[in-house]
Image 1 (cartoon, one colour):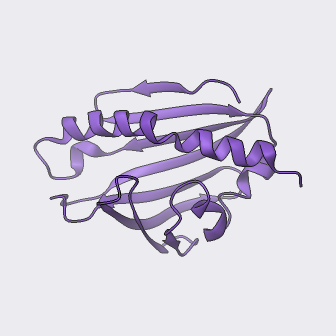
Image 2 (cartoon, one colour):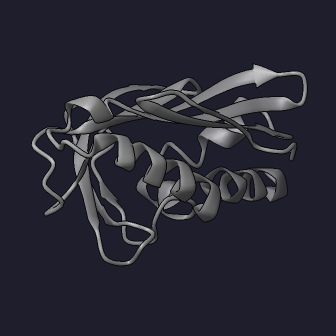
Image 3 (cartoon, rainbow, N blue to C red):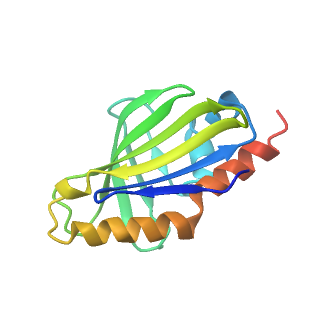
Length: 152
């Protein structure tokens, strides 16, 4: 596993990581509720089809996150609308989880965007919170450990 690269613009947060596993092996952890639970949240409930709903308790243990599957392309990406419940969001943001073949195996990226449209005046602070949380919770590192240790 290579170091995480980070990129933050005014309205989005992106983290990327090289994983020493093929895109098909990494995709196994995207392709089912059970796989996603292993690296996103153990209580995730998701209907993995376009238009399907999801919900889980966030990593802070207090905030619920819910939304809809916007797009799914096997071994390519999973795109979700993303809304923190009871936090004053009027509209969802978006989460893009993407995979791309690379020399090391797979480049996995996680991008949160659309904060300017959530309906909160303090959305720039949300970007900063997500930047800190993306580093603190080490979600992509958990995915990498799973995929790199997968014997199949």
